[in-house]
Amino acid sequence: MGAFAACTSIDCPLNHSVYHTYLMKKPDGTPDTLLNDSLWILTRRADDTLTVVLNGLSGTSASWFDLPTSYMAPEDTFFVYLKDKEGNIMPDTIWVKKENYPHFESVDCQPSYFHHITGVRVAGNIIDSIVIINPNTTYDTSIEDFHIYFSPDL
Amino acid sequence: MTHRLKIFTSISALTCSLLLLLATTTPVQAQKIFRLEKDSIPLFRGFQVSFDLVGPARLMLGDRGEYQAALRINLHDQWFPIFEAGIGRANHEDDEVTGLTYKTTAPFFRIGMDFNILRNKHQSNRFFVGFRYAFTSYKVDIIRESLPDPVWKSSTQFGVRDMGCSQHWLEAVAGIDAKIFGPLHLGWTVRYKRRIAHNDGTIGGVWYVPGFGISDNDNLDANFNVIIDI
Image 1 (tube, rainbow over the protein chains, first blue to last red):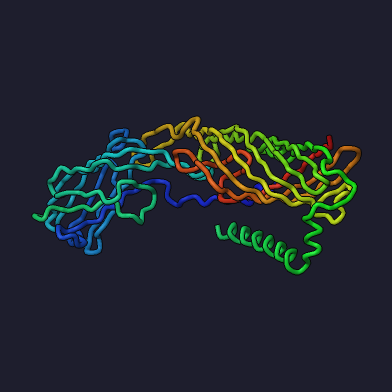
Image 2 (image 1 turned 135 degrees about the horizontal axis):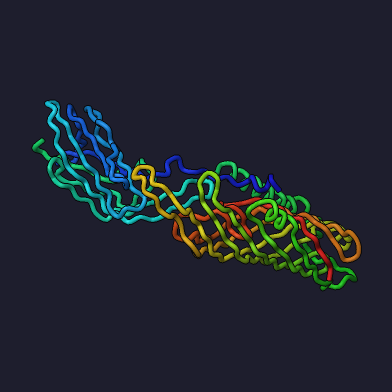
């Protein structure tokens, strides 16, 4: 009986948290990078403390980043801080509005939530705009979800 | 997945090989196996009822299993149209790793045919192969009472209750049936189950499907049957 019970195997996904992938783009659509600038992104937890979700991304190869997604909040808020080579810190804020759906694979796999992105907006200090590329997000991090355009004045 | 594909391919190849062997190399023997033998034995030979002991044992020892019984018509000791029905149940509470609870209890039904492939059909023991079409419609509770968000540190109740699901599948069956005494027979059945259509509800997937077992494209299963001639 055990032999027959053991014949079925479940491959649980490696990631059970959903991360959104942001690709930095220039206005002409070509990849953008941070060059000599550094990027920090924080969010506010349920207990009102701040936590870092992106820590000092910088360099000429930094053209994309991933941000986590809350399980059930209808909107996630991210506080963005960009530090230039002179040490000036420029803030901005991203709001991602979404619908949340429970996702189940097996009792052996961690449960998760998938999301449908319904809107994204920015304060507009250093980020010009964000475009939704993939509104239905899962724990597949190989898919690009947003294109982010920093202000050309930077 | 590759392992399951190999199993499916092997079984398919074996089945095709046997059928080709029967059809091409020994046509006379093949005809003897599948034709209705002309003798003094009447076509209708009675009914058999049976019930399985493996499913209840699985329920006693684990968190899922089935109660199932069958009614089989004996046609000339060769052909056995069969109807099977059962109740499948899973009660997996508060998984020690994921904290998930999975509950369902629902009926399932199968209809099909067994063929006695022994040369002497009318002896008291039988070796048969057969097929089934099976169906179940069920509701499932998938719950995790408190799921903490790893980044935001908030907590939410995860899951659904009474989520409606269904599944259709086919089974290839092989088994033996040995007479013990009087109307009592005992027998083993081995089943290869292949899913053909399914509705897994609204949250991505299911875990246990009544009558089919753990949800997948295919499954292997076995039953130990107590069979009574009536």
